[in-house]
Image (cartoon, rainbow, N blue to C red; front, side, top):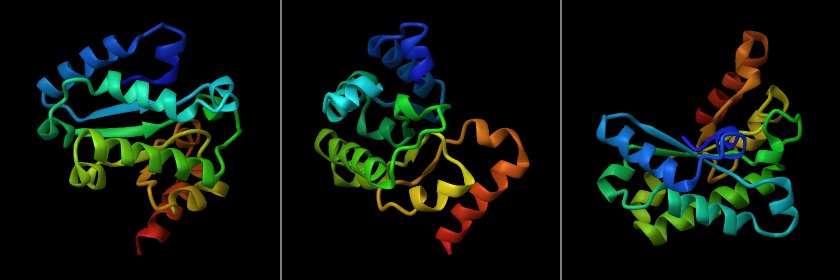
Length: 163
């Protein structure tokens, strides 16, 4: 929920996304809440502000118990389908910020247990470096997941890190 295309093409607001989050949780589904900034927002130094706003809006009135059924996907809009990927440092910084936000909003246990995925031009040649960051718990793979030849090396990179 909250994928950038729905936010920016279909004008889905945080309020609409929050209603969908509550509906999905009520229906017993696991929610994947996508958050991420535009290139102009990153260049203006507003990444954390944008993430805070999207997290606050998307998780409004979501209880600690329900938060256990939420996964966050950080998808910098400027890196989705563009071939441009956040550097490992940029990804880690955003993920660390999101984890700290969760600790303040909920508590340290929720922050530690919540999975925060990176999505944004994840490919075989960058998967291991991105997935190796301390606060990156996995990847939300887009186009590279459409063909086994490009997806299997991403899976292999993740498996290498789990050992």
